[in-house]
Image (cartoon, rainbow, N blue to C red):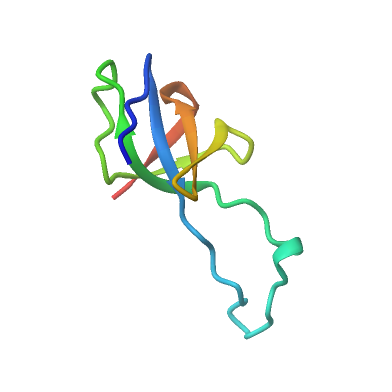
Length: 86
């Protein structure tokens, strides 16, 4: 994939959450919430406090979703990121 975000935006791929609870109950796909964290895949040249491969936390409805080469990604404004998981 060759994609470069513009402005103060990052390209994020959501990380999948577990399909079962701690007690072993299986959660069906239609009952799962969208994950609110993901891995940064690309950054614009205007972004300086986030790096590629950082795991970031963002709002449930943040960003614009789109698909490239069969993979789903989000383009998120840096101001909509809550933090970086270290």
